[in-house]
Length: 194
Image 1 (cartoon, helix red, strand yellow):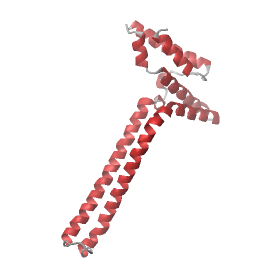
Image 2: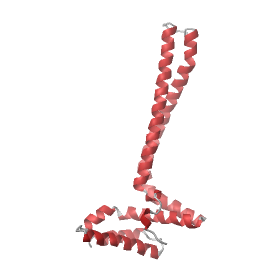
Image 3: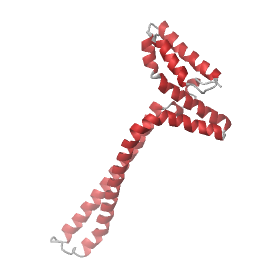
Image 4: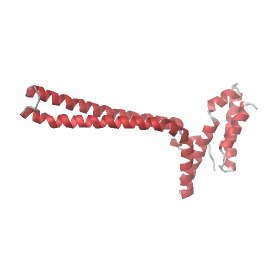
């Protein structure tokens, strides 16, 4: 069995459950990709590699079909179809990415809390440092005020870093989603026709 037949067989088996005409349209579309590749002098193996994993592609197409069904009829069955399609698409990614993401978010939250506490503590201590000396502090009022300002500034810096890191993390997740899920772009070249 050559690469083309293997790819199309795996794609067809992954599309199980979709309406037969939709499956036939999708398979015909991907046969066209192989035909165009051959006409351009590319091997079936090169075309299959460029198209990606057929199992993953089938999950994306099933999720896209569920999304289109939801957009067309807005029923409980179509909503469940979207949910099952997206869960099937994201299952492996969630098992790999979710634990790492939970660790990052937990650590980020801890640093954010430390930054906020330091910022509030430094801000609360500054007026007292200017009026009177801290009990047990060996320096003068100026040193206490500078120490309070340092804690306030350090807390503000840590909080700002956490906010910037959160923005970067959200941007990274959006890019990841766009790279892995074609559901974000409407239509996706019109591959599914019901």
